[in-house]
Image (cartoon, rainbow, N blue to C red; front, side, top):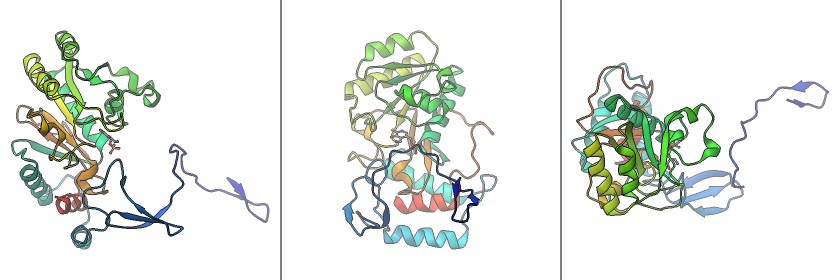
Length: 291
Ligand SMILES: Cc1ncc(COP(=O)(O)O)c(C=O)c1O
């Protein structure tokens, strides 16, 4: 609320001030370059937690989004959407993960939230194993599995999560033995935490321990996926097969979309997951154009 010249009070809405911002205001972008309002051009190595997939304003991406917007921009998930089917087929082909099913949502946090929910539905258990320095997003279960007490509100702390050291397979087995764990969640390569990653023997141990104790292994590829490590998903460097893979950031090249890739042993039933606009026509057109 501020005062204007004639003494009247002017009501304005401010932004909720949660981001410590860099002093840069990008106004246009092309390929890997961003220009700010002072006309300074930057080489964009960020673009949103890592380099975006096809760069700014890629001609194919722009044409496909424009075409889709002019045809059918969105509808809710109450109708058939052939673009979701096409996206799933293409993602399966490009990633090599053809045997998984795809659930679409709007962000990375949502992808992990749904992955953790699926693991809990499937196992009928609720404790989660996560790792020191992990980051999995800011929704309820996802933030509870994030190793940063500052961003966990009391409501999130109701979720029981045990944080272990990366690469300590014995510690993981000691927890899984207790029989109350639904999921182990791990980033292919830690992003926000500082680029630490599990060794191949650790990833393989996680795969076999999860199999042995009936626990769901969730690979969070939201930051490490979409070709950023040289393979489509970073876990593919370790030759393992997770039960669930989550993806987002690179998927829409900036357009909000997230995906949960689900192994056939996890069975779908009507209503168990849902979202109004997750995977809407425009989001799918963006994601297909990226692939
Ligand atoms: C590994 C990882 N998981 C989940 C998320 C959350 O994604 P979003 O910000 O799209 O909700 C992030 C975001 O930084 C991330 O790096």
